[in-house]
Length: 100
Image 1: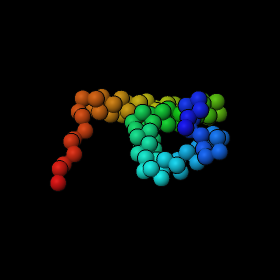
Image 2: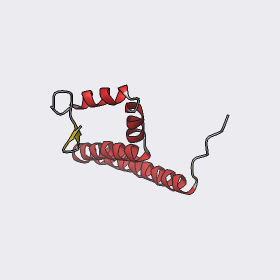
Image 3: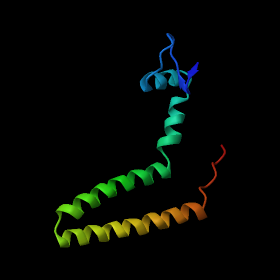
């Protein structure tokens, strides 16, 4: 049963996230949900963006000029690598699964 799009438990109260995952695990879908949402290139990109934002914020406000220059060069290299990987992922699709 759903209330406002969120599953409701046995006694009519909304399930918390742990209960929801346990309920779905019993049906064998929890792992596929986590795999499909957490192991994506988009999640990787968002995570890297957050980490780089924190690094650049700290380095930009607290480091010396030479350290800032070095970190910005490393960040530029990472952006070039990420861009080339993104282009490669769009141009060259992953190989198909081998049948047994």
